[in-house]
Amino acid sequence: MTQFKFVIKRSGAVVPFKKERIANAIYRAAVSVGGRDKLTAEKLADDVLENMEKRHPDGDKPHIEEIQDCVEKALITNGHVQVAKAYILYRNEKKQKREETTLKASTPSNNIPWSKLWHILDWTVDHDLHTIEAINKHIRNGRFPHVVHECEEFYQEDISIAAKLITERSKDLKMVFVSGPSSSGKTTTTIKLEEHLNKIGLKFKAFVVDHYFFDLAMHPKDEYGDYDFETPQALDIPLINEHISRLCAGEEVAIPFYDFKTGTRHLNRTKMKLEKNEILLIDSLHGLYPPMSESIPDNQKFKVYIESLLQVKDDNGKYIRWSDIRLMRRMLRDATHRAYKPQQTLEHWHYVRASEMRHIIPNQSRADYVISSGMPYEIALYKAKLFDEFSRWKDNYKDNPEREDANLRAQRTYNFLNQIESVSDDSSVPKGSVLREFIGGSKYEY
Image (cartoon, rainbow, N blue to C red; front, side, top):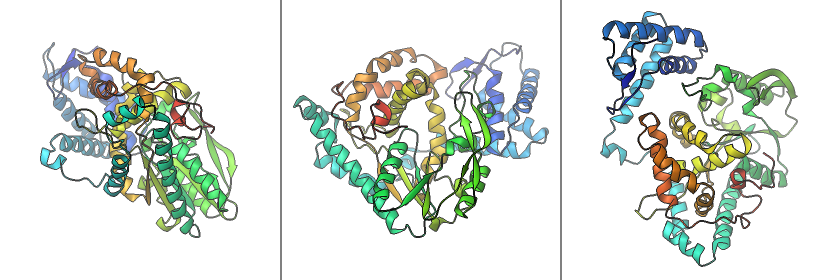
């Protein structure tokens, strides 16, 4: 039983002190360099706590920076040099982000596909779908089905262009990656790409990266019992590289099977081999993460990146964030397919975004083509499905310093949903739409 009851955050907020957070932070750093010893992480957390208690009187409130200093010291003193380096680098990275100036924040980022973005904005303006107010007018005038049709056609054009580019390089290709952040629509896009390419005679074989997850018990878990399985380190990347390398060389491999119900992986379950003229098709969050396929030459890979590049302004002149669109998509999908309540998805989302910002979005410039799955009409559907929830969350999280991220996202999403006209009838959305991956009713099996 620790003498500490509270800790002071950088914002000055005072929150309950939980030793589990220290152990979890140490274990995360260990996982990032290949370690998976939770017991050692817990022992190191005990050392940190013991040293902290020697320096503070009973009832004192330590600062988060001091705790992190003690973690660094404990890692180095106990000989965990690689883990200490990973912990220090991540801490410095977070510090640099906090210290970014307004000038830096306004500087164009290489993490944004600007050329693609301007093309989408131009199309959105031409079709009078660039603001919530404009979309509302279409809905009030009974033009919602027409808007759906136009948006779906624009997305299909993107698929066709990607398929054409893949075809032009097909003689050298061994694999096609479809990558992008959570709920960007990778699965449907992968299916549609395969449909296009099959018509011209290309043959594909799906390589399911999800079977390469480590056992759930080996993932970092926070004090709320929430596992962080969003990082590339949640996957057995060395085994992935070994298998795709051997497959591309014409060998047969036995891929594992991951049981999502039990959270356990079973090795050597399914034999797999590429037949002549077959290409691996890989749908993965981390397809552009360099270590994922470092064993394969770049000229043998075609990399597609997908994101909900929505270009719609709210009534205050602010663009709706792509991550907020994907959050709502994932809420709906998780509730249907993973027995997750929307609130659980909201509270887990900070893990999703942290991994995206470190491992996915910085690598989008490696893509050979960028596809946008963003549909200006989709927010009207989410108003009908999720608005009441966000209305409740914006109040529930308001004064909870431990849920600052959930509070920020709930408030922001509520604000723009409050402005859009609600559409509960989704019958005009095609059964093959990328949005059916999230709202249900798709003609595809996921």
